[in-house]
Length: 261
Length: 334
Image (cartoon, rainbow over all chains, first blue to last red; front, side, top):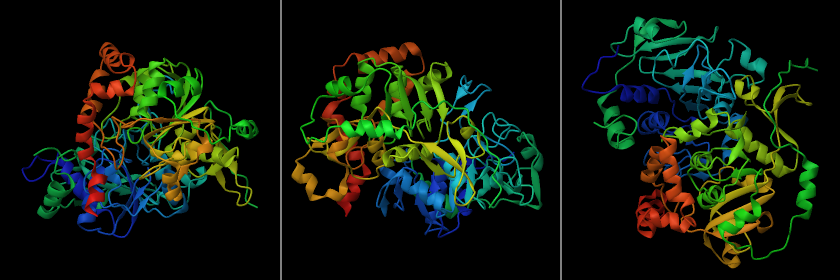
C-alpha cells in the first residue's frame, strides 16, 4: 500500500495527479469536492486557460475558494457568464465541452458509475443515494469523463447495483448502439492507488501508473473486477513542492478536501 | 434510410402527463390582470398548494430557495404531494421531514452536495412511502422546458443505455430526419411552483442576480407560481432594467416579501449559507425523536418564517452571513 509519508497525504496526491491530466485551453463541467480542487490547482499550474463551468449556470469564474454547492456564490465570483442549467447542459450536448469530472459510490470495469442506490429492489433500496444529478448527462454528453474516488473493493465492483452514469456500458460499440454521441466516453480514473485509463479496443479499465509504494497486487486486492495493466507500468510522479504549496495555501487552505494539517 | 434502431422501453411511472391541450386550456383562463398580488406566505400556501398537488421548488437545493414557503407547507401539514426532485437538497430535506410528498421525480435528492447525505430523507425514501421515478438534472430541466414551450416532449441525448432510463418514464424515439436513436422527455406541468428572487414588484415582475438554474423554464411550466422576494420594489425600478426580468407578472399568482427568505441557504449577493444551522439539521435527523423535537421547535412551534429567523439569531446572525457572502465583496472590489 501507499506508505504514509511526511510530505503529502493520499488526498493531496490524488488532487495533484488529477490536476495534471487536465489540458490547458479546454472546457470542463466540474463537480464540487475533489474534482474542483483538481481543476483549481490545474488553473494555478499547468492549465491557466482551463474554462471551468458549473452545471447550475456559472461559467468561467475566477475561483477564490472551494464552493460547497455547484450553485453557490463561490462558483459565481468574477464569472464571465451567469446563465442557467440548460445553457450549460446544452453546450455539452452541442459538443462544446471537453471534460467532465465526477465522483461515485460504485464503478465497474467499463467506467459505469452508480450514485443512485445500494440494493436490488428499486422501489425499496437498502441505501438510497442522490441519483444522477447532472452526472448522467455530463458523462453522456461531454467528450471525456474523469472519475476520482478512493480505491477499494466496495467501490470497484464487478456488478453495479444500479447503472446511473454511462461509461462504456457493456463494452466496445455499446455507447453508440444505445444512442449516445459517438466519440464521447470515460477517459481517466484517479484513485488512492493508481492512475487508470481505458484500453482502446476492449474499453476496459487499464492501470497506467501505480502511486509511489503501491504494488500490482495492492491494486488487484482492492478491485472487484479484472483490471488490465499497461506494459511498461509507470510509477506516478509524486506531487512537487510547488504543487503542494499552491494546493495548501491557495486552493484548500481550510483543508476541507485535503484534510487539516 | 438507416435501419430503425432497436428500441428499449422504460418502466417508471409518469406522475404528471404531458397534456399540452389541457395546459393550454388552463393557461387560457389564467388571469392577465396586473393586480396587487402581495399576501402572506400563510395565505399563499393555503390558496395555491393543496393536498395531492404536484410541486416544483426553484433555485438549487440550498441556494436561492423559498424556505418560508417550504416551511409553511410543512406547518400546514400538506399531504400526498408530488414533488419534482430537481437539484433538491435542503428543500427536499424540509419536505421529507414533514412527510409531505408520496411520489417523486428524482434527479438529485437525499444528498446535500459537499455536506453529505440527509439521514431522514434517506429513511423516508428507503421506507417505501414514496413512489419514485428516475431522471437527471438536464432531463428533468428539459421537461420544464418542453412545458414552457407548450410541446409534449423534447428530444435529448442523455440517459440512454442506463438504469436511470430504465426507471424513468422517458421513451426512446427515432429521429425523423437522421434516423438516430434519441431520448424523448415528456413535458412537466407542475400544479404549483415556488421561487425566491432578489426583487419583485407587487404584481410579480421578478428579477434575480446571478445564475438562474432552471427557474426560467420552471416558472413558465407551473400552473400556479408563488414568488417570495428579498425586497418589493416599484414597477419603475423593474422597468429600469427589463432585460433582468426573468419572470413577468402574468406567470405569478402570489408575491410574498420575505427578507432573508433563502435562509439557511445561500442568497448570492446577499448572504452566504448558515453552515452551523445546516449541520444542526443533520445532527437532529440522526434519530426520529430528535428530529421531531427539532421540527416542533423550528417549524411546527413557530408561527411564521420571522419567528424561525428570530430563533436563529435574527438580524444579528444575518449580518454575519452577509459578511461571509463573497459576491458582495467582489462587487465592492470592482
